[in-house]
Amino acid sequence: MYRIAHRFGRIEPRRTATAYVRGLLADIDRKNCRNLAEQSGLSGPQAMQRLLRTARWDAEAVRDDVRTYAVEHLGQGGVLIVDETGFLKKGTGSARVQRQYTGTAGKIDNSQVGVFLAYATTRGHTLIDRRLYLPEHTWLADAARCRSAAVPDQAAFATRSVLAAQMIDAALRAGVGASWVTGDEVYGQASCLRAFLEAHRLGYVLAIAGNRRFTLEGTERTATEAAAIAGDWHWHRYSAGAGAKGPRFYLWAWARIDADRIGGHRWLLIRRHPATGELAFYRCYAPSAMPLLSLVRIAGIRWAIEESFQAAKGQVGLDHYQVRSWIGWYRHITLAMLALVFLVAVAARQPDSAPEHIPLTMPEIRRLLALLVLTRHRAIDEVLRWSQWRRRHQATARRCHYQRRFDHDLKMSLEY
Image 1 (cartoon, rainbow, N blue to C red):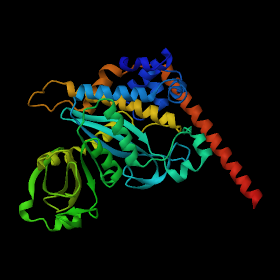
Image 2 (cartoon, rainbow, N blue to C red; image 1 turned 60 degrees about the vertical axis):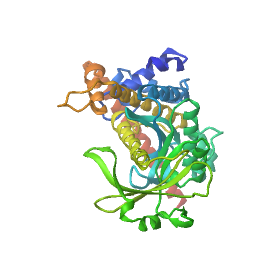
Image 3 (tube, rainbow, N blue to C red; image 1 turned 135 degrees about the vertical axis):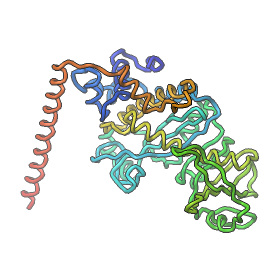
Image 4 (cartoon, one colour; image 1 turned 120 degrees about the vertical axis):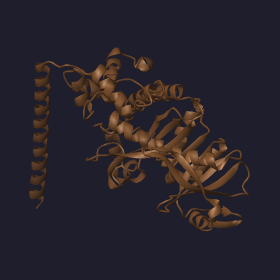
């Protein structure tokens, strides 16, 4: 917290931000402003809410500190990973919320979608940047709705691949020494993102669908057609990295594609599951020739961002926020990323463990922190005061709900 102290002009929001991050690391079920304030010993949630809404501090500058901190502890020469995750919401007032497909629910649901950039090395991986995806038709076309959610006037529609390019460009300008980028099919099908990466001479291994076309040996083919003509001698058994149950072995084949294009080398990489035969495809590029095993390892690193999402949501409350405004979303997400990178840094710095123990995991590190450092023993009057606050807040919410329903029923009866 000392590293970001200069980002706050006053001591009050600085102290509140410290309490906020300590609460995100604490052992509480739901890490919203109310519970974080109770955990911190505050008399109410107003200070936490003010920190996310109106306090003067720059979330983008804190994001820069998070990114610098991550590189310091994980080292240079890592891989940048782009992906999005959904945040399920019930109402329609939160910034950029709409019914859309999200992998979080596995279906179309009312949600916000955030595009994230992760950084991964052999020491660990964490989230280093974020963008809130803005649907073009349901939001930008509704000026009143944008004003109610405090969406900035300069906000413009950008596809997820454009948001990814913006974050990668910001990371490179900040001195992040990455030479590879990986992502799923959303980014593999984006020709503008691939052109951006090639212009910056960044290698990439991006997933693509089986119907994507390219030139193979002078003939235009789809990825599925290329896999069908691969002989037995084309397949090699390599591990895509360690999983929960050991190395993840697959069969891999590759071929040079788009040989007529100048500048760099391009490949189609095919992954086949040894048991089910399920296929996955990747479009790859590197400024110079690369062995197959290098591409396989980059393809396997893509799952690190899924692990970061799981850790961020499960350990530091990335999706526990109850804010509607644009700035509130960015501020909460940034502080959650700060709490996450702290856990990652502690895990990266631990000494080698004894053979009979696995290394400390992030959940275990957070648990030890919560028990040994962050636990507060509260007096009975404080516990009862917060119980009264919750019941008073619930009564107010119920009264407002009943009033809205009564007004709606009255309006419908008068129209009838």
